[in-house]
Length: 275
Image 1 (spheres, rainbow, N blue to C red):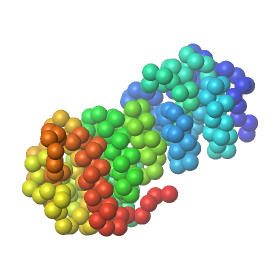
Image 2: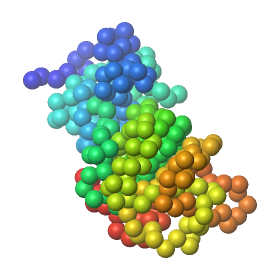
Image 3: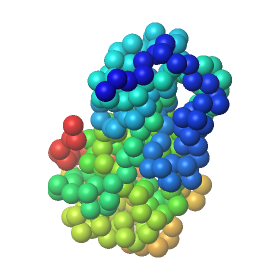
């Protein structure tokens, strides 16, 4: 099958495929189609390696800069469409469009699939509202060797453009599951043999004195402004506070997540990495 290559036909902002892809910048469009946009060279590179890419939109300048990505898209039978600057702006959620955007299948899986295979370390985001924070936690979880990231309650859509960019490709590296029923997520973690460790500024145990971090664990991480709900704190096996040695009032969500996940990762072996 012949695939469109850069230089064949220029797609404008009025081209039906560009208009359809533009709908993926809205959550409703993503949920309806089961697809989302990955913008920028790093996100596109990881999508081509680990995801399912249907189409690559690329400006002439970006195609020249990233010839290896254009070749890789052709190798996986993705359609390659050259776009003009206006179309690039329509498909971008950044101030300065990078000129390269992939249309990908959404990556979320079921709780059962995400927690399969004897997990050792899992991050659970509960009611996290900021997509940049969610994406950064995905990146941290990936770096710490976590087996999965679970989105519970009213957590932001992991396919949000800002979340995808903040994850710098990690969205494609480890299982991600979403369930609005927080209780179901916590029960699934417990059933998978994971202790529920709630990161909380008022936790009853300091991270520095925790002696059981090598055990399989699911770290519960709450909303940026309100933290974890009271019922979630009550459901946890332990509430853990990150010590503040200086005069800072607190740590932001992504930083606290990094400290907690790495504390567990360094205390003992983490689960096997997903290729």
